[in-house]
Length: 117
Image (tube, rainbow, N blue to C red; front, side, top):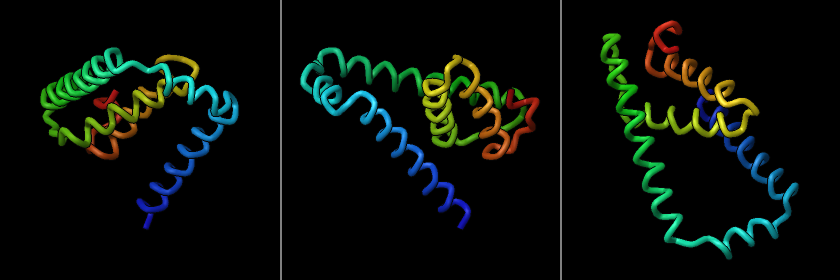
């Protein structure tokens, strides 16, 4: 039951943030982006972003292996994407994403907080 509530609250917060951005900038900004986006720039950006997520997740697996811990790749990939997203929402570069990564690694990968940082 707790995971369902957590999922629902996360979804609700995400929807509220998205609605706030649309309210602040107006739907015209979204339409402007949609009309001006060019696949020649979007496709390489998406490819390299996904590639970097995979490489950084693999790097974290290597580091965890050095500490004698194993983590599932998809769970760690999800953690990396979540931390990346939070770091874009916080005003400073390393305030939101890094503490969240340590928290998620502690609870989902059963690492102690010292090793997770």
